[in-house]
Length: 335
Ligand code: YSA
Figure 1 (tube, rainbow, N blue to C red):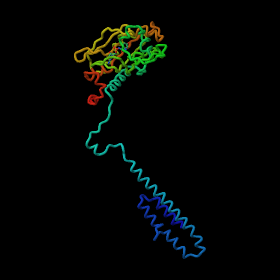
Figure 2: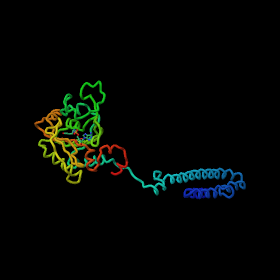
Figure 3: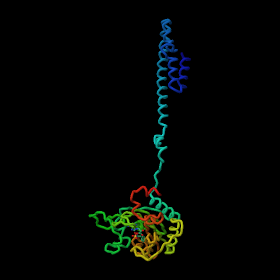
C-alpha cells in the first residue's frame, strides 16, 4: 500500500492537464479496474483479522487520493483561468487596429509653449514657481504701488469676489488681473539676489477681440540684486526671444507706464504687418521694495510680464487669440 501511495502521489503531482489527471484517477480509483478499488474488493477473500488490519489502511488511502486529486484539479483549473487573464484587455480590437489609425492625445499648444518658456529661463538660472489665481486686493494692487484711488487701477478691469466682511485689503478678494502679485509674495519671504519666473492664469473683465481674452496666461519675471540694470534686462529678454523663435525677430522697446516700475517700458513684435504688444516691463519701483521691507538704496531689479497667447500667436502664426479656447480639434491637432 505504501508503494502504491507513493507512486500515485508522484503521478498526481506531475500531471500537467485535466485529462491526464482523470487517467490517474481511473488507474487507482476507477470502479472496474482501479488498483485501490481492486484492493478493497479483494478484502472479502481475507481472514477476519487481515480484513480488520488492511481495511482501514486501504480506505484511508482511497480518501487521501480522492482529496489530492480534487486539490490538483482545482489548481489546474485556476492555472487555465490565469492564462485567460494574461490577455491585454486594453488592446483595441483587431478590427479597430486594421481600419482606424490609432491616435494618441497631446498637449495643448499653450502648454507646450509654457514648458518651453520655463526651460529657457531655467537654463538662465531662474527658479520657476506658481501663485494663487484668487488673490487679495493687497497683493494684486496695493503692494504694487497702486493704492485704491489711483487712476492706474483702470488699466486692469477686475473681477471682484464678494467679500463683504473684509476689513483690510488683504481680505478683499479678486481674480488676479496679472501675475505681478507673485513678485511681492516671493520678495516677502526671500532675500536678494533672486531671479524667478512665474507662469500663470489671469483674468480681466474686458471685451474679447482678436488679441484680447477674458482669461489668458502671463509669465512674470523678476531679477533683483545689488547691481542689476536695464542692460541685464535687455540681455535676458533678447536671449529669451531668440531661443523661443529660434531666430532674430523684429521687435521694439517703447517707454510705457506701470505704477510698479520706474522707468517702465513695453515690448512689441511685428506680426502680420502690425506691432503686437507682447510684454510690460521696467526697473522695480522703490515703493515696491519698501512694501517688502527691502531698502531701495541696497537693491535694484528688473521685472516683466508677458502674454503667453500673444507669444504663441506670433510663433505659430495664429491670427485670432480666441482659437486657443475654441475647443476646435482641427485647430489643436495641428500641434
Ligand atoms: C509690467 C511691469 C513689470 O515690472 C512687471 C509686469 C508688467 C506687466 C503688467 N503686470 C501687465 O499685466 N501689463 S499688461 O496689462 O500690459 O499685460 C501684459 C501683457 O499681457 C500684454 O503685453 C499682453 O501681451 C498680455 N495681455 C494683456 N491683456 C490681454 C493680454 N493677452 C490676452 N488678452 C488680454 N486681454
